[in-house]
Every structure is written in structure tokens, then in C-alpha cells.
Length: 302
Image (tube, rainbow, N blue to C red; front, side, top):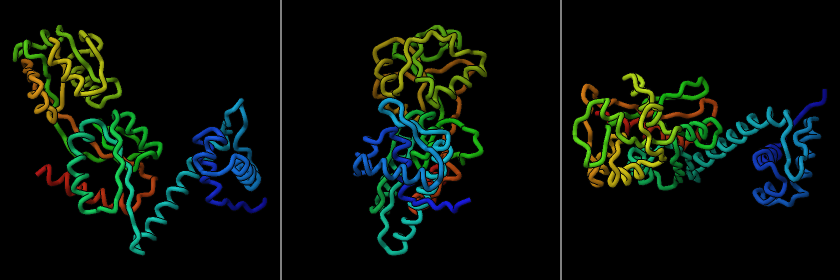
């Protein structure tokens, strides 16, 4: 069997074509001509002796060989990036880059304060923060689209590191016309506003209500939204109820939205988690961020 040697530059090009599914789109991304991209893909296929793509209309579809090769190629390129960053660190030319994904509560109420502090201490670091629902953040972590994720529910996957970082309480809230204290039966009869299905808060509250014998499907659902601020906007003007994190209670007061007490039910405590892929190489910037963030969360718990 012939010796196989793969140029990392060809793997970088392969990953781009795999992700874009098009020679023309890849050429724009790589700043190369389409003929050059095609030539290098054929060169890679010849060097490994496997077909990686086939045409279907204007699209370039990956073969089963490409599906197998892609995750390994991504890991090699990530490792190369980590090596380059380590060298820059040693030579004093290092500028860190960290990609974060966070669900709405950590993304808006926990991380901003820490990120500001961190950037003041590390002005050569660039941070990208993407705020989305917890399921999407987990997906970004699994696909290697972000270095670290911050989510509102526990996710058990042997490939993913999970650590508890913070907790808050979830309160029922309602329009100012609703009385302060309700029975569970009275609460369930009122128009209910839910977060979207991929929301970590929604998932948590589904389990909490289930523990009290309530199926979310049995609620008098008025609306499903993907924003806590939209919930507050609606509750300000509509006689309805919902639930919010304790981090949002100050906002609720500003909207004249009332905190509700439900007889026999204490507001539940929900935890937040830091997640990252165990096999994804961590750059010096990411390691430094994790170390400082650990100290930050310890201070919050004191």
C-alpha cells in the first residue's frame, strides 16, 4: 500500500467545500479561483485514493468518505490553530480569540459583567458572544462552532464536559389585574404565555409542572415566544400569566408586571451549566478565560 501524506492546506480547502457544498461559494471564501479549488480537491482525492464529492445539479455533495474524513480534518485544523496560538504566546505576539454561545439568561445577565472585566485585563483578546436557545447552543458546542457554551439545563453526553456555574429561581408572573395569590387550579385556567420549545427555561418548567401533575399541553396557552422581553411587553397589557427568571424581576417591576404566589408551591431553583467539547483543543485564550471565569463564579456563590 502506498504511503499517504496529507497537506493541511488541502484539508482546510476540503472542509470549506464540505461546509459550503459549492465550488463557487468556496472560491469566494478561500479567495481562490474555481478552477484552483477544483484542482486542489482532485489533488486531495488522488493523494488519498478516495472520491470525496460528486455533482448533483449545481451542488457538490459529499460522499460517505467525506463524511468520515470531515470531523478528523476539523480536529486537525483546530489543533493547528492551537499550535499557532501557543507559538504566538511564546513570542509575545499573541492575540486571543474566543467564541462563546449562551442561552438568554447567562448571555444577558451573567456573562456581560464578566466579559467586561476580562477584556479590561486582556485587551488583546477578541470575544464573539452568540445568544440563542439552549438547544442551539449545545448544537454549536457539538459542531465545534463555539469554544464554550452556557446553557440552562443538564445535558448528558460523554463527549461533552458539563459543570454547574450558577443558579436562579423561576417565578410565576402576571398582569397587574391578576390577584397576588392563586391556587394551582386558578393559575391553570388563565391565559398562559410560554417560551419556545427549545428554551432551557421552558424545558425546566415543563418538568417542574409535571412534578405537580400538570401537563404543559393542558395549559390555556395564549402564545409561544422566544424572548423574555416580549413576555413582559404582553403581560403589561394582557391579562395573562407566565414565568420568569429571578434575574428579570427588576425588569418585571419596570413593566408593572406582578409577581404571583401559588398556594402550596415554592418557586423552583434552576441551575446553569458551562459546557464544552472534550476533544476540541483549547487555545491559551480559552484556557485563561476558563480559569478567570471559575474564580468569578466562585465569588458570586460566596
